[in-house]
Image (cartoon, rainbow, N blue to C red; front, top):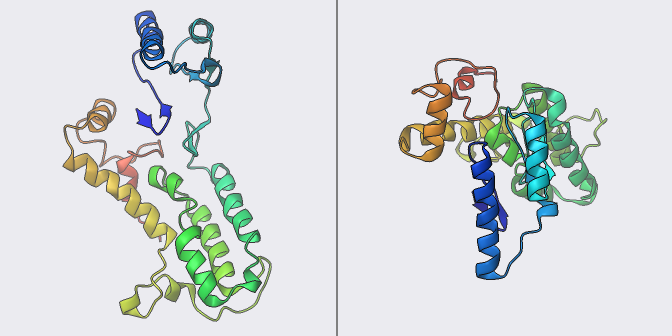
Length: 236
């Protein structure tokens, strides 16, 4: 898998595959003159004996990747159904707000920032994980306080109801996306892709792990997409 200058190799754990990977990287270097910095690369074995992983890392001259880890800014391998796992996302939103000095912004300025930035900060996590309701409520509270120009501990009344802010324009609202709706919509998109792209690689992997129907009708323990069965939950 390729993303910009980032590459991920996935395969069955065996010595022949490790040798093949070494040869591929060597051929790439000889063909293009670009040498891979193995000291910045990492290898991970899923359900593989640690001694074998250590040996492979030593052979390749790379580091060992362990869970929990981040890829493209998103946490992987953790228990994202727990509130504490989202604390970093919440802190990041609050940190961004503190830099904007909301009291110096007009309603129009705060509205623009609300739509363009505050909803996008947690979007990568929400595209993969079903966010706990407490986390969604706290993030919405942060957004609401920012829009109304209130300090976090303020008890002042809001001039505009948050339900109005998140309502569609044709219903008299301001059309700011609800994080709950955004999270569920992004996850439902995976469901649509699952049925629309039956022959894609990721769909075949899901079927191999979670049965032919993708485990849609069963609420599984995992909270990672495609845990499509978890979409039955209709909390509001």
